Image 1 (spheres, rainbow, N blue to C red):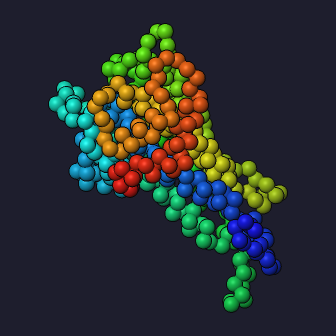
Image 2: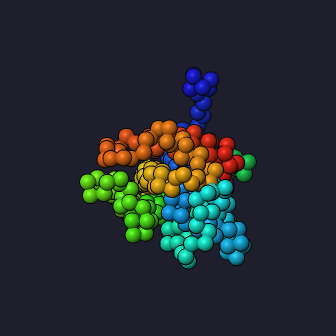
Image 3: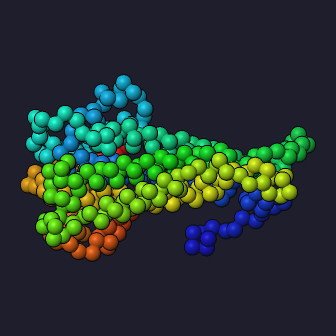
Length: 334
């Protein structure tokens, strides 16, 4: 506090209890998680754009006309982001008249999935901001009315439900990301070398990276089980229904951390897949990501220890530096 130039607050009667007697812990952890989650939602769109270019997918599902007919705001933002990231793509132009009719859901329906998660996170943020500005102590004092009310504002149900919703939304972003990763590594679908290994059979390429993503997605399925449906009475049955909101917030944070690693794996795989599309260049936003990552990670010519590379990609994605480079190239992302 001294380094920040702040002085401790001198608590008066009842204020110490007010800081710990309500939903403060779950709300604080929830808000920190949601702030990072909304940033991760942008990164998910970047990963999607990279993978879409890598598989030579279609941009038509991202056209604004699609979202006029089903006007969920999150989906429209995702469509806007992907079109912006892929603008000017030579890869996309190279297959405009290809015989493919449509892409798998994990690409074609990505605006609807990413968008629903964005909308869920926005709703959770609205709930938690309301909570952060609320009085959640008990009893409630109204000195102007000479009134003391013992009530239930301390109950964490609003936060618990919101954080359960948020963690499900985050788990879905990871789930669809892993599916795109698998598609890039499957030669029957991508037309690229199996597992993006230069010498298939002798080398395993990025096969085990997809294993890791699959494991994290499976763990998220356990963590996404709603904490708010559970309650064990305490205090001689006086506290006979509790929210488990702190558990919901903790689990949401854990799901977010898993999501970040899954997205880093997708980006790492897409980076390698894009090498096979050279000399064609991707869109301006995707190229900006590729250039930053290629400065840190050389192409995969033979099997090597990949954990440090994944950690490097993770650090670049979630430090904010890479997003800043992308937005400098294409403008702010929604």
